[in-house]
Length: 353
Ligand code: GLY
Image (cartoon, rainbow, N blue to C red; front, side, top):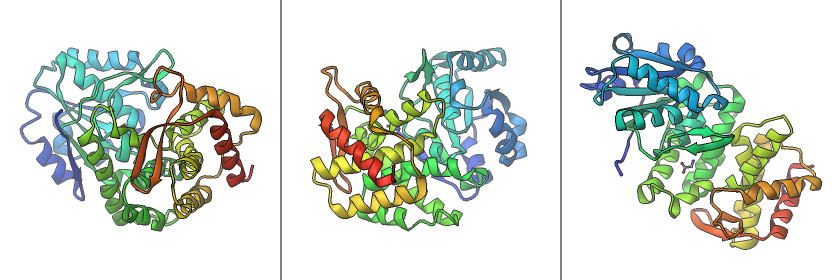
């Protein structure tokens, strides 16, 4: 599978110009959503904008639909796109997922690049080649793995993010710290979330994206080690679905952060994670992410959500990605119901519920 180029950009206009060199002559399209059209498109160079046709879709994950995808295909088709046309996806995970899928399928695939504009998109969705849409109420049900030519990362876009969306993206960076090395983990714990230094953030993002890149390089199609990227997500997705069912949805990264509390505990209990990492991780998440309120009456519902996790095999067992230490990844670890309930008890004790 082709590898994508990751450009940690400190000069967006120059880097983009270089990246687009010779690629805009046969139809050049920029996909935005209603937010990124307003806030992010103006940061691109006038000359580049003058060559592009802009496609706008509605913002938010609930618009990552077949209908929105069809609108993008229609726009491309009616505006003369050919197999040599080029697409730039400018937005968060919703835009890069849907745009990547639209580009990967239009006329059996045109080239595209991603410019992520949220922290979650920057460190996760825009990198690694997963594209797709939600379908029949299921997230990312339809899609392909087809990496962008390049991903241009520039923290200018992140300056308009609110604190909650920033923290949501940062949760994936916490995960990348835990699944990589003690050094990356130390940098995560030292980062000042109350007073963001964007130069320090650029370096931290560089480090974090490299963690994902290295893993995806070895296992692009998630047959094995790519499951490391699911740390925190088995319980995290259950929390996310639970919150949705109560009519009070939470941001993905928050659910993953709370999920990591439970999965750090399971790692401590079942796969030998040291107490110091458990405590430092749990403390950092507790201090920055607050809590999702659950009681023991919700455990069965949460467990039910976990049984539907994509990582499970068809034999009904729930398979977790756990840690034996920082960077010591234990994929496909079966965890029994009672241990999961204990981990939920630990989560509640930790966050003070
Ligand atoms: N979001 C996890 C992955 O890209 O595999």
